[in-house]
Image (cartoon, rainbow, N blue to C red; front, side, top):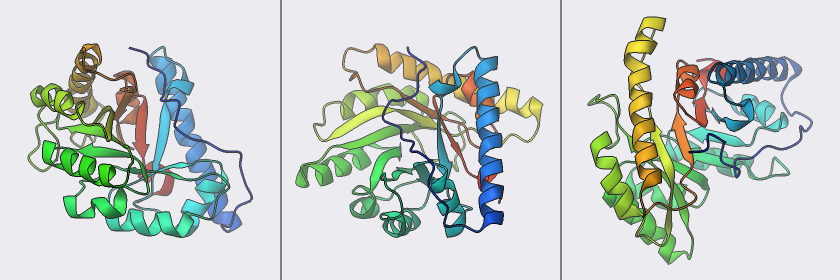
Length: 258
């Protein structure tokens, strides 16, 4: 497979910031530090930093902090709660010259589809055939195509959503029959790892397992040519995820704090 980041992920020239100078400076420095860490992890894995797309997760961010990040030209924003994603998408819809690309990264309830689907560029958290079918039905009614990822529960935690790695291939095959849903790839979250040893024994195996499933699906005859997103890694483990093949990382607290 190509490790290159999906070409439809967005960036824009920097704009003047609506944030205070103090908040703008803090967000700019934190974002630069994350970008440097991404580059270092890519270099360690013998990959190009340009092959890694960064989704800035706004869970811990204030409105002013989000505006500061947008002024840096960062347009891919992620949110785990449907209501907050809808509210922020509406709030920021006229704040940038280029449209913000929203990513739904948390569990999506089926009754929230009508609010999330119209404003999302990519839904990372499709974890059942029923949810995929409901997304397809919504998109068919609106003559649209919804881009999605299958969420894989590679850590085996009961508290996490996602399909078992062994079930992802069959779910992908079923989704690929849907005309109004486009399967772009896979997403996973590793169990929390607090130490370097835990990154090696907990996070890395989960990322490696998801990469193997991703490659298996890409080789399948039913797989569409846009299946090229491997979304793995958050603030505490994105470097390990990059080493294991992630080309999209989702980073929040490392940019905005907790």
